Image 1 (tube, rainbow, N blue to C red):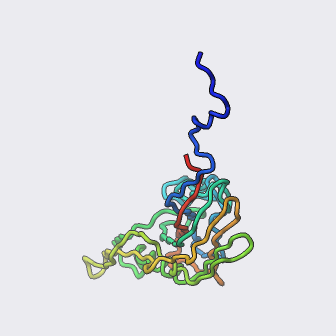
Image 2 (cartoon, rainbow, N blue to C red):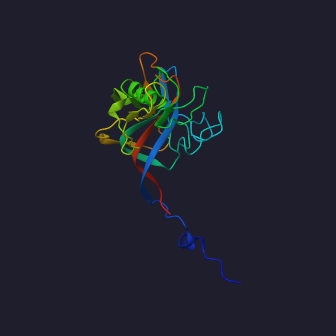
Image 3 (tube, helix red, strand yellow):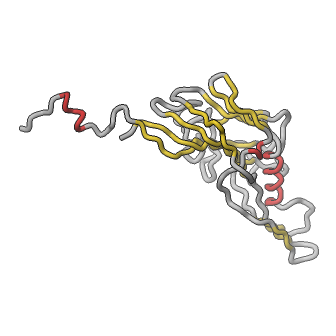
Length: 238
């Protein structure tokens, strides 16, 4: 039988490098429903995976959040020994195709109206939804009991990547059919934090989006809105 190594030698066989930390490029993200009647306040990063209500397209309606909704492991904090350096903040707003409670289905940017109507096509309504939501609202970044960022309106936080769609409207009849392609998103310089903000393990934090009054969607359909914190995740090295 081989001799068992002494305890003092066990570290030679450890798969972890004790005390060593690695930093990887990562985001913290959280998505939730923007109800058709609007909301006075939405709190982000408060519900981790397995809690809250999913808005992920294709998920079972009313089920809890999954990795496609958020990558938070705990409610409003990072588990020990993880920490995060926040360098920028982004907001993503997606128009929906359903008005049912706790339900989000994606709205396609293309629409076909086969009968005479004065109503806007769904895609055009979605453009107005993004316009209404992003051109209003106020963002606060709370850490502990303090606010470290206050900005308004929400279009100040454009995403770094998005799907681009050019808009067009056409008709093949003077009275009946109409085709429409339209999509909207915030654009411009990303919102960088200078200096960046460091979140320690187990430190409470949240992003709150609030409005002084309800801002309903023009389409009368639910939307989906998400907040992304871009930066570096620090964790134990292996």
